[in-house]
Image (cartoon, rainbow, N blue to C red):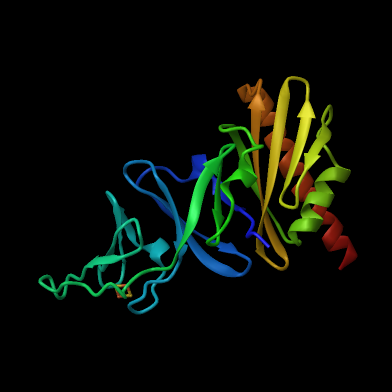
Amino acid sequence: MTPAWIPVALSADIEAGTSAGTLVNGEERVVWRDDKGAIHVWEDRCPHRGMRMSFGFVRGDHIACLYHGWRYDTGGQCRYIPAHPDLEVPQTIKVPTFAATERAGIIWMAPEGADAAELSALPETAEPVRSLFLDMPAEAALSAVKTALPEGYGVSATTAATLTLQGNDVTVLIAAQPRDAGRTALHITVVGNASAAIRRTLALWAIDLRNRLEAHTTEAA
Ligand code: FES
């Protein structure tokens, strides 16, 4: 089966020169953007002593690890070890990397072999609404959205990882990131007449949804 693309962050949340750690199916990943604006998703672990790469510093087109300063280029290859400045770094010192792309205002990652055409049905760009973090599996999170749609919107399309909602002149994309078996991040973006007021209304709807789901969980406990 062709590996599927997984949403990992809103594009707007990872500015050039910054990084963030995240969880994908229980595995730690670092999402970072270099100074040219290109996005990268790697295993969040330095090959030297295991420090999280997301704790390091993005410097131009590489990340320097926080612990001993080893520098990795955009391909994940270690290029410089400060304690041995004259050493030609062995090619084997490399951080595992993943395919990464941006579509509909969201950063997506995939294991090797993913088909880029899988995302082609989505709009190229979109405005961010917010990410919503829920303590439930991804499938349950998307089901919960369907039972509490924002007023004036209906479901127009679904995939395993996304819901598309259609309102008046506005299309909302909700993409589910499985953080682990019981936790999900929903990344929400909007296309069309995405005024600040509409985005604010959608953000408030999302927060209300999370509050209701949390209250439901507390009652059930
Ligand atoms: S742990 Fe990263 S450079 Fe040592």
